[in-house]
Image (cartoon, rainbow, N blue to C red; front, side, top):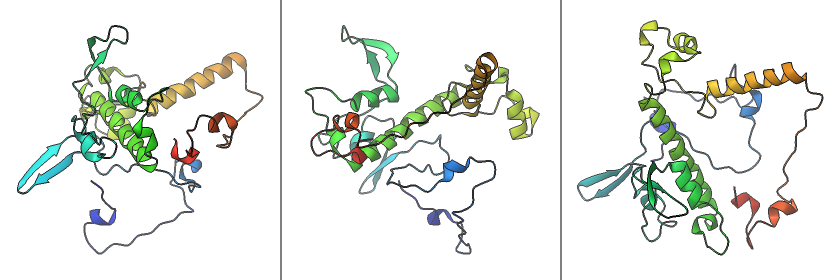
Length: 244
């Protein structure tokens, strides 16, 4: 379901003020650089932990299918799943690659879609040939992967022992009420991109400096899509902009 910012306005008495030359206080400047190429992005409306259902309406009957339902992918991307194949399902299990026998370990969304998008020799992958639709599919499924991770963290706070985190005082400051400790959803350092994950990276960097001294060089490499190493991996007629 796609919404616009205008649809979420409570009334018509409002005014848009867009300052493209201003950066929010406390944010990194380069995060708000104007894009120079066409990108595909996802905007999460409302609570990111809520499910993104597909709504199928047949006359007076309405049927909801959650994003983790096996038919979600086929309903959202009928061109990719043109035979109505099943997509990702939270009940799928890992399979032993040697014996081919199903195991008791649950298959994550990340592993499933990494398998579906893999380039294989002598095997056609229709997903990789869908150009712009493939880019939308990749972004959409990445959101599904992140939603699954966040849902696990949210509903397993007791297992993650959120009350014992070293940085629990950060949660107190953010909420302002000590009585709410334990009710907060705290992202662990294992969640990539979380504040604690980035904090540990910063601590590791400081440890390197203490042991080996300050660095003498800061080397960056800018990728060129015209590189031979990149172009030789493309299929005939395929463009780098269509192959994220």
